[in-house]
Structure formats: C-alpha cells, structure tokens
Length: 546
Image (cartoon, rainbow, N blue to C red):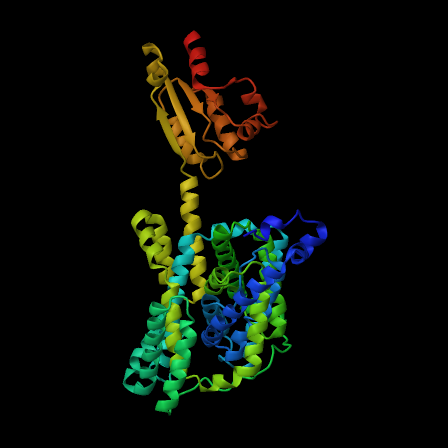
C-alpha cells in the first residue's frame, strides 16, 4: 500500500500555514473508504471513554464527548500525524480536576468555566511553543517521568473512583492519600448493589478483552452494567445528557484567574504535548511517516484554543484511539474527522440513553482504564537497568500520591535535569597508557595522554581543572575527539592552565567548533602559539625531538 506520506511533495508557504492543503488533494476514494471504516470504529470505542474521562475531570458527561469531537478535527487538520486521534485523556482529566477543584466545586458552572479557561491558556502556550520551534523541548521530559506520572495518575484515578465503586457519599480530598483516608473511614457505609455493579463491569470488560481482544470491551461492559442496574434498581445513575452538538462557550479571561492556575496551565500544556508527540512517533514507527514536532505543537495548541470556545476541556493524543485508528486501516487524517462526525451523530441520537448508565459501572470502567495506564513491563525494565531513572520514576510516582498531580511532573522534570547536569558536569578524564603508541621508555614518566569525554563548559570546568592539575607529567597530550564544544568559561580555564606552565600542553584531534572557541579573539594570544596536532603520534614525535 502506498502511504500518503510517500505521495506528498515539498511544502509551500501556504501549506506550512494550512498543512491540510498538502495532503487533502492527494486523498483517493480507496483512502476515504478505509478512513470511514476506521472512523466508525473509533467513534464506538470513544463513547464510554469520553463519558468516563469527563467524570474524572469533574465535568458533566457530555463535555467528555465534546472534547473528542472538535479538538479531533482541528488537530487532524493542523497537526503533522496522519493517524493521531486527539480528545479527552485520563491523565489530563486528572490534572484538570486537581487544578480547578481548588477554586470551584466539581461540576458547577464556575468549575466548567475555569476548566475552559485552563484549556484556552494551555492551548496558547502550546501554540506559542510550536511557532517558536520549541519541538525539541519535549525531549527534556524523560520517558521515566512519563511512566512515573501515568502510573501515579492511574492510582489517583482508581482511588478517586473507589467511593463510586462502593456507593459512598463522601467529599473529595485534595490528594490521593487524603481521598484514600476518607474512603477507608467510610467503608461501613458501602452500598452492596453499587459494589456488585462495579465488580461486574470490571469482570465483563476483562472477559470480553480476553476472548475478543479487538472488540469494544468497555462499551460492552458499559451496556452490561446498565442492564444490571435496570434489573437491580435503586442505584445512582449518570443522569440525562443533552443530545446536542458542542455549544459556544466563553472562558474566563481575567489575569487573576490565569495567575492562580499558572502551574496547572504549564503542566497541562507540557503533558499534553508529551502525550501527543510520544503517541504520534510511536504510530509513525509502524507507518513510516516522519513527524514534525513543531507542527504537532501548533495542531495541539489550536485544537485546545478553539475547543475552549466549543465546550471542550483539555485534549491531547489518545493512545488507545490512535492505535485502533491505525490498526483499523486508516490512511489519512480524514479518519479522525470521520470519527468525530460519527461521534456527533451518536451524541445527537443516543445521548438520552446515557441517563441509565450507573455511576458504579462507570467507576468500574475507570478502574480498567487506570490499570491499562500502568506500563508494567517498561517500569520493570527501568528498575532493572538504570538506578538514576528508577529514582526519577519512583519520585514522580510518590509525588503524584502526596502532592497535586500536576506538581509531580515538575518533580520528575527537575530530578531528570539534576541527573543530566550532574552527568554532563563530570565528564570522564581517561588516561591512556603511552606504551600504546610505542613511546621510548625515558618519555613515559614525563608524558600523559588524556582523553576528555564531554564538553568543556562552565558546569564541568571545576571537575576538569581538578583532574588535569592532579596529573604529575610534564607533557600533557589532550585528545579532543570527545569534546563537542568549549564555551567561554571552558576556554578561560584551559588558557589559565596553559599560562601556568605547570604542564606543556599538546592538543590533538580537535573538532572545528571547540578549536574555533580556543582561537577566538579573547584567547588567540594563548592558543595561537600552540600547535594543534592531527593525532597523538605527531605530538609524541615533537616531544621526542625535544
């Protein structure tokens, strides 16, 4: 099958602004047929997810479905991935709840308005990052941070839904630990009917997925829970959902509100981008498409900005829906548009039936969602192979339990940055035995050959200076093959060592960029008098002559 990417020419300025102009004219009838089938499959799968995620976010059920309609279309038109499907996600829904619930009661008009404000501001941040070509910034959010955060979000979701699974009427705490304490304290009030429905929902979902791996297991489980609730009776239900399309909405635009939610806004923006790029790249590895991270930033930013005015809260790429979209045979971004259209049709004609869905059943579905969020094999691999990344993962997870969820991202990012800076500030100084180069015996005590494996910059100067000064040899040969760059402070440190004349320095294998730094006007007086050798043998030959 010829991919859409293979048929696409280079981009014009107009196509850079409106990327859909590049691929839309190339869509064939065969592509559309495949995309319609994939879109219908995606719409069926997202129905229980959208309602469930809205519950996590503290929003009315219909807002979860709205978030899977408008943002999906905008992200498909302005993003770079041909298979990424955007919409409500579990992790972002938790952050929306933990951020906004500090200022308003979940489900209240003020809560909804603040959630839309959060969405608009996060979209602006994402769009600006895309326009400023900050696509590479997501690389600083390590995979361990994402794993730890998603595992933490999964536990936070599960704990938050315990009260619904048990049929308890208790208030929500500000952290996962507090929610767990409140739930344990009210166990005596457990509703056996709600518990039966919740456990039955989980069992149906697990059984269907085991027997029919590609089937809509959550949708079937939700139908089963609804039927069981009708038979049992007297259980809390989700309630009526309007059978209407996303309506125009107006976020709060005052500065005070934005300042109060600033930490949550940045966390949502970053996590949304990390989710979208990670999923897009994962699918692209199978499809062979090249992903433009900056364009994806723009697509995600626009989808959230526009979505905020159409009753949508924060959206990002959905791993489940994107994977199903690709495996269902989707060929172009039209599949995401078809999925949104089909979902809108379902919402118009079948929304009233959502009133019969039991809340305990939705809680059961969210337990299944939470379990699927935890990537156990990758977590085990990291704990087996990398101690530093294990600390990052574990710390992010613990922070998610003890703090507001959005703060756990910052904990993980700061730890990752700390270990990265610690590693780069301590480049290895490798001493090579001169005998390797067949040096005359009388030169060996006076000659040391040193390979520096890392850049010479302000963060590594102290470590390098200490290591080089500790060398007792008269002649010091520096192998610069492992030096990628030298900043001003690094050049100053090397110049000071040369001028002290404690050693006679010989620089070999210097790359163009670090060599240019040493010969810059500020240090040319020191280094222009030195000879830069191609290799250590040339430097040793000079030492032998002297």
